[in-house]
Image (cartoon, rainbow, N blue to C red; front, side, top):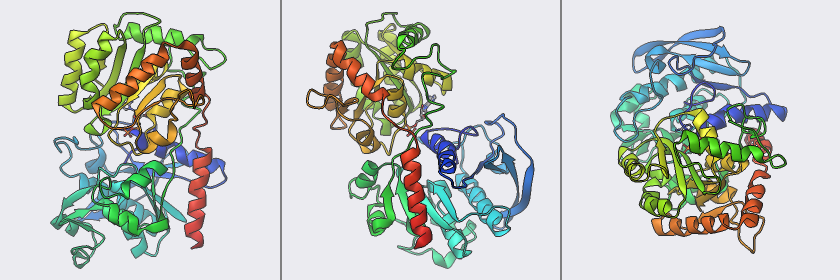
Length: 465
Ligand code: ADP
């Protein structure tokens, strides 16, 4: 449902927007099909490549497929996608009471376009629950093989059982323990996990976690049953877009060899954030969706301690009002130390990665996480919980491991994160060590090269099977 530059809520948009280009560089032909949100994407939309009706229940909905750029096909269906936001509010569910309808329009559009020969594919790579029935539709049609990637198992696309009636599938296929049924509800995620030819998760670490009963959100058994058809592949990042040496959104550019711009970015962030402008004060950054997943409520009780340490914190994000309140309270108490910027803002995000000394991700779980990789590239040392993709991408720095790139909190608790942050601040006071840790992070190769190749090997494997 998300793909840059056409839409974005979280990391999935970055991944869907950048993986296909990396695959094309390796010689495969890869295109994306994604909704057209006219209120969100204001760029140019190319010519129509076909149109047809899709059925949700008995009602036909007219879909127009449009090209955007050379490699993207936009699904234009105003009833489904002419909206202000992409998803319902995750806390209240308000906003898109008909999100199943939106998902079905996208999924039926892919199915119909393949049936009618408007699109051709050997593999259809589906992303998260919103595409969960595509493997079923395509298998029913004798269509291309399918890969289903879990970006976040916590969002499962569960609907009342009777909603199965609008999918176009025979109602007799919905019964207890069928691929569509999950504890009496209809689950898009489960259908994708059971039916796709291959299932992937966005990091090996997360893939290892979600097969465990306590981490699998009820679907661990389904994933275990997939055996070697379930693999973890770490996300890459678009290293051309996210390059501090050339990033046009930055106040000043910098690189390891020409580092002065980093101090200018810090000064700019302190100034814009209305914090005390102090070059030597440790400045912590956060860019995030504000949800309990991200563990910001665990960090909340440490805000007074951060301020009293003489450190500063800038957080950019929107979401859970209870967590927002915690940060607003601290901001009111320490206005020159703590700043919450409550919005979605690409430029501010870049300014925080570039201007901060350290980047906080106290996540309770993290399927992959892209922010820590952006932070490392921009010389902001990640202080993260040792979960999922964070564990895979951040190596703990210490005297025994001088090649480390950040600081890990081993448990998702306030105490544990307190320990990690204290350690990070201690390292900050030892400039040589800190500079080394930061340089290690800036030198990491987070490009798509390896992971795009791994996806292609997996595609080949299921094509050969
Ligand atoms: P998730 O996908 O769980 O939200 P990731 O770390 O994988 O987490 O990706 C988050 C992406 O969203 C990053 O590109 C981050 O910079 C961006 N992002 C999150 N919140 C904001 C915001 N308020 N403004 C701008 N970008 C944001």
